[in-house]
Length: 399
Image (cartoon, rainbow, N blue to C red):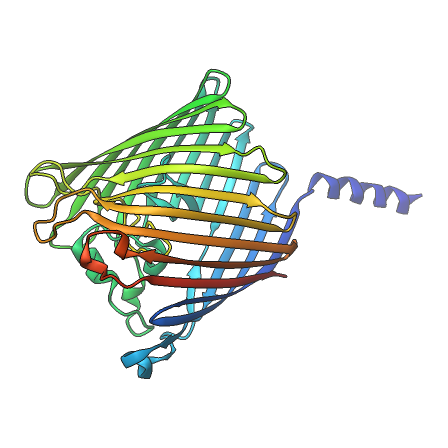
């Protein structure tokens, strides 16, 4: 009888401490090839998650990657494994606590993207607070970039930033590992409008903490409106206004915009067709200048230009061809949003890109992408007239 009572007590005590733990590894193999370079990048991502069942959660992950480069032509002698041989990165690492169904706080290396996806996207170190309210939700947070790996974060807001990012990183020059130091703070309000529409407003400010000679502080105000006039149709429109202050000189201003139409097609498969226009201002006068986002992400898969001084007109199609096979393709045309006195044209050209994703099992995922950029369809000679192409392939295995 005594043993039964002890066993019942232990079971009751264990049930009060119910929690879940999970961990594993993700093995990635990626290949990228163009007319000049073949790049092979294997990577290993160990991860760990824990949830106490009472509001606290922990997620930890890291990435260890290698890079092999094979050059063609005159640079073929430089082919080989890039230094350092193994590059370590902290990936998503966060601790979260949910006070109630409507209030949650998260801290660590966490994901963030502005409401339009034009200004800052990726992983950042810091914290954010989300509060659900009867008339919408409020998100606030603060981040720091100086501990991120520069090749992943892509924070290059000034010419000095770009020069520092271009410096080679090795273990005996570990200071070249990090992203330029900048602090970010944001506040976002998401509000439902009617039964199916939503309005989002966001303020984002960026403080330059680098030792650059010419520092840049900037503030962004953005609005986005999502409409769903029908269940199979989504309309999105928004804009962002940027104010900039350099160490010397008068304050300057810039802007960006996004408009998108996306509709589900009445076909036998689940597929969508989208049309997108996106732009960032270029240098127009002494007051209006080039839009300068925090994250300098390429706007094409082959075309490497960033959003500052660029406009993109795009058509995209995506489809779930089979239960295990997903495909998407996009046709984008790139234009310059400012006049260059050394060039007579403002048309960069067109890019076509297609991607296939095959996932036969939950822990196996393979991707294949291919496309080309056609500068001959524009009138800017910065890229010459030869077609630029790229092929990517990858496989991910979860353990």
